[in-house]
Structures are given as structure tokens and as C-alpha cells.
Picture 1: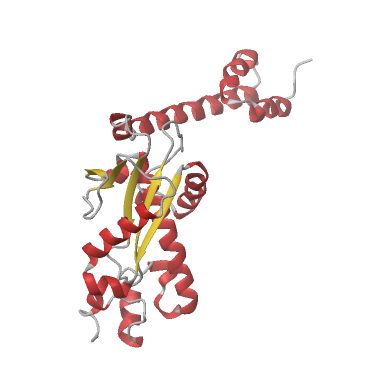
Picture 2: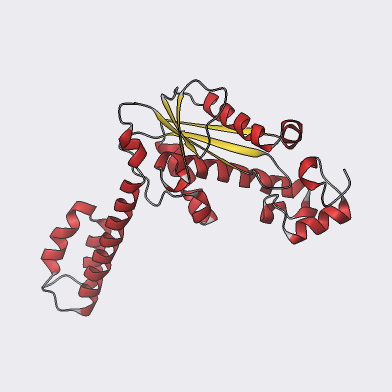
Amino acid sequence: MSNSISEIKWEFERAKEKELHTLYEKYGEDTRNGVQNLIARYKKQEEKLKKERQRLEQMREYEKKYTQYAYICGIDEVGRGPLAGPVVAGAVILPHDCEILYLNDSKKLTAKKREELYDEIMNKAIATGIGMVSPARIDEINILQATYEAMRIAVQELRTAPELLLNDAVTIPGITIRQVPIIKGDAKSVSIAAASIIAKVTRDRLMAEYDEILPDYGFAENKGYGSAAHIEALKKKGPTPIHRRSFIKNFVSV
């Protein structure tokens, strides 16, 4: 007597990736539509997984190029453009053999996927660091210098000292570690993509907390960026302590 479709489905659900081929052979001649649909679905998932791994392999170009370094750190920042809130930098050292599926530039991911990947990065990384520079400091030294400062802090926060930095586009002043700036690096390097995600999630969570304290500006939705509703609230209610005075002078008197 042949297994029921639900029993076969149970087998597929519990099978490890390398065991799927055996199940394809075992049930390949089963003529029931439910079984053939099940096989087709798993084969489609395998093909999708294969393409994703190929994409990730391309994103390891720089990590493979510099394999002589044991600890390669990706660096990225978020929050250069907002009217409010800090600029945040992330630093991540991943193991050479680390696989984090669907790792990508944080801007190309949904908030839900970023949160999922954040947890996986924090679990799998050798070391992570976050650097944060306040709006007042941004006003004091300008956004570019504040970004560099956030990146230096992120590197200092790493519990394992990096031997090489892969940076998204910039060369950070005041750091003696060798640096490789990569244009659009968050889409070309798994290490930079990971840094991009932890920086983005950290900043987004912080802006959601600010929204609870300062609810009139929509910080949970706009993350401090200059949306129409945010600018309107700024004009009506005036700036908060987390607004960047040097950024809002075109909208209100400061």
C-alpha cells in the first residue's frame, strides 16, 4: 500500500536538503497529482535556492579576493539624509564560510526581511559594532565628518580586531587598518551588506522609540526623512531636540 499524500508531504518537510533527490526518485513514478505537484514545488524551491547561492557567490568577490586576511570587516552607514535623528554606522566581521541567504543592500529588503536577517547576522557574525553620532554632533562637525566618526566608533566596538575594512564607497580618515572602498559596496559585498542591515535596523528601531516620545512628526514611518507630513509638522510645531539644525534651516528658523 502506497503512502498517503500527507505522509509523503511529511517526508519532504522533514528531509534535509541533500536527501531531497532520494525522495524525487522514490516518488517520481507516483502518478497522483498531489505527489507530482509536491515534487515540482520542491524542485522549484531548489532552483530558487541555487540561483540565490550563485548571487551570493558573486557578492563574495571581495571577500575571496582578500582571503589572506582572517578578519575582514564590512562597513556601512545609514541616515546621512534625514532631517532628524543620528547617523548610524555598522561594522560586521563574518566567518569566511558563512552563508546568510538573501543578504543584500538593506534598501532592497523589506523591513520584515531586514529584521530576520539582523537576527541571523548577529548570531553568525564573528563580531559586530555599531557607531552612532548625534544630531548635535552632526551640526557641529557636518554630516560627512559625523559619518566618518560613526564608522570609527563602529570599528572600535568590534570585539575582534579586523585586519581589512571593506567600505561602502568611502575611505575613513584616522584609521590605520587597510581599507578597500567599493562603489555600491552594499550590493557587491556580503560583509558590507550585513553592516548595512544592522545599521539600518538599529536606526529604524531607535526612530520608532523617538516616535513614542515625540509622536507629532511621524518618526516611526519617515525615520526622520523629510516627508511632506514631517516638514508640515516641523513648520507647525517647531524642531525637536533630535532635529538637525543645519538640515532644517530651509524650512524653519533655527
